[in-house]
Length: 365
Image (cartoon, rainbow, N blue to C red; front, side, top):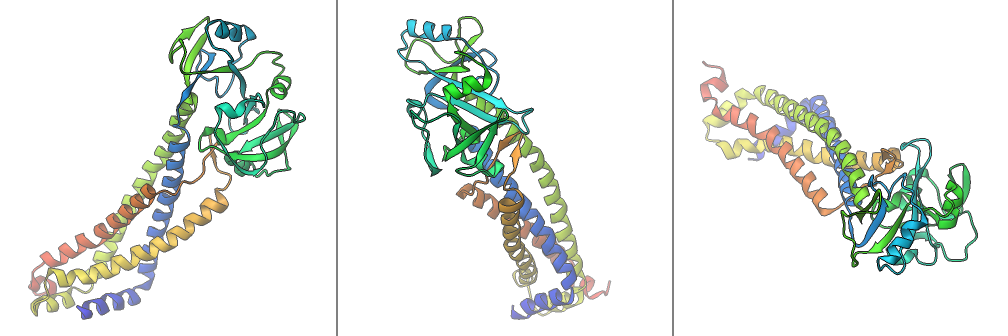
């Protein structure tokens, strides 16, 4: 057994260039999948949150929580007449020239926005009733992708707003800049109009109702889920490319390790002839595959961390920021990936060598 371990190490030293190439191939694959999966899990978590306690009253296009909806105070009057004591107005708009450089802006009533939002302050202070105009609190993802901190200015439709706080919700709202409702109405020239009204999910109106003319009742968070499906599809596309890269790398590793073992076929023939069986021969292949995979995992983690926290710090998809999410399911998936590469690169060449007869290995046929 020790002799096979030493033989595997000796061959790796002799063919160090080949082993280095295999390590680099697996490092790139592992880092790519770790980066991709961590962002995919984040997108799935951030953009799939539906809030059951509140309904959205907005335009029938279903995009009132993101962009373009505009309804008059008449809707509020009708809601009050329908039994809703205090419909909560909000303005939602993408301010910018397109989705890529736009900013999700949300206008809120400062005296009661905490009723409808659960958030944690990362730094700074939240907006309070009585604050002066041109103040904003922004989501953690927006702060990271725009590299903006507390005390900095954020441009919204060409006007400077001072950032007083950075919050985190764990949802699409982490991409938003919150300002007062009056500031939003002034900024967009909305007058008394708003984008939507929030009402409790306990009254006569139900999700899916088309109410009044061109007014739709939807579940809060539904619009974010619509955009989330596009973002996860974006990652799925790159996931397919990653799988193809992984398959090509696995085939290369298997072929090159088999070629390395084939150069030692005479030694394997001698070992077989003196009683070394399948389990003993597997040590040779497991040592080499294990060294490549373990080294590739370590280097892959370092490479992924470099990309995620340096080059991809400001990454966004379709204008929506996505942060990496490191959770147990991610580590389970990466463990399975490493195990698959280990088995695929070691088992086929092991079986191929073992199935050859001793005369074939010794070159006597």
